Length: 368
Ligand SMILES: O=P(O)(O)OC[C@H]1O[C@](O)(CO)[C@@H](O)[C@@H]1O
Image 1 (cartoon, helix red, strand yellow):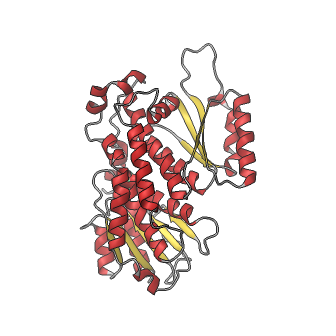
Image 2 (image 1 turned 90 degrees about the vertical axis):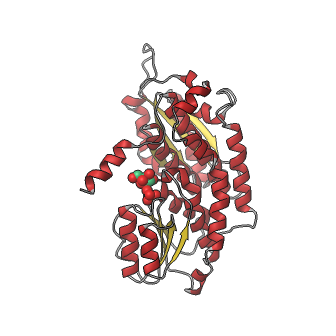
Image 3 (image 1 turned 120 degrees about the horizontal axis):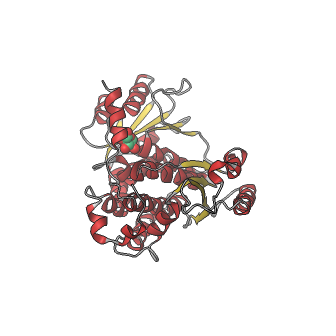
C-alpha cells in the first residue's frame, strides 16, 4: 500500500477504488440530517416530557454510533442541569436507575454491547429510547418494553449514517428542553454540509479541495488529533474513528487541557523526531488541532502554547477551526471535512474505504 497523491485527482481511480460508494455516502450527509430530523419529529418524542426531566441521560452506542452521545453532550453544553454520559460498553453502571433516560443508538440495531445495555435499561425500569433501523433486535426490545423507538433508514456501514443516528437524540433532548434548538438549526446544518460536499466533490482538484488537502496533510504521518471544546472533542473522536475505519490508519485523539498533561510529551519522542536525511517523512507524528470559537480562556492559552511547542520541535501541525454559531453547526463543519479526508486518504493509498475486515473478523470470532 503506497501513498500516491496523484490518485486523488484521477476520477477513474476514485470511482473504481470506492466500489461501495463511501464518497457518495459522505455526500449524503445533508440529506441524512434532514431525514434524521423528519423521522425524529414524526416519532412522539414529546412523550418523553411526560416522565418529567430524567436524573441523567446515558447514550449507549459503539464506534460510529457512540459519537451520537458525544455530540448530544456538546450540544447541551456545560450548563446542562443533568449528566449526559456516553457508554461504550456492555454494562450499564450501577447508579443508573428508573429515573434515568437511556438512549440506545445503533446503525444495525444488532450490536451486542448496545443490545445488552438496552436490555439492562428495560430490566431496571429506565426510560428507554432506541434509535436504529426498522425490524432490528433493538427495535424488538423497545417494542416489547413499550418504549420509544425512532426507526431510521440506515443502510450500509453505521459510520456512513452518522447524521441519521445523531439527530434523533438531539431532538429528544430538545423535547425535554435540555438543548437549544432553533427552528432552522437542522436546515442550516444541512446547507453547510451541502456546501462542503460541493467543495470536496471528487471532481474538484486537490489544490482547491479541502477534503483532499487534509488527506494530503495526514498522509504518511501518525495523526494526534486534539479538540479544544466539547464540540471539537466530538469531532476529534469522529476523525480518529473515520481514519481507522475508512483508511485503516492509526490515529490518536485527545483534548485540551488533558492532552497538555500527557500527549504533549510525545513531541519529544521517537515519532516526533525527523530524520532530515531520510527521503520520506513517514512515521512522523502530526498534531491536528481542532479549534473552536468557544473555548475556555485557559484552553485557548494552552492551544497557543502547545502550537508553539510543536513548531519549536518541527512537529508538523494542521490547524482547523470549527465554523458556525451553534455547536451542531461547528461539529458538522469539522466532521464533514474529516469524513471526506478519511475517504480520500484511503483512496490515495488504493484502499477501499468501506470494508473493515479486521472488525468483521473480530465480531465473527467473538460470536462463536
Ligand atoms: O451502529 P452499530 O451497528 O451498532 O455499530 C457500531 C459500530 O460497530 C461497527 O459496526 C463495527 O463493529 C461499526 O461500523 C460501528 O461504528
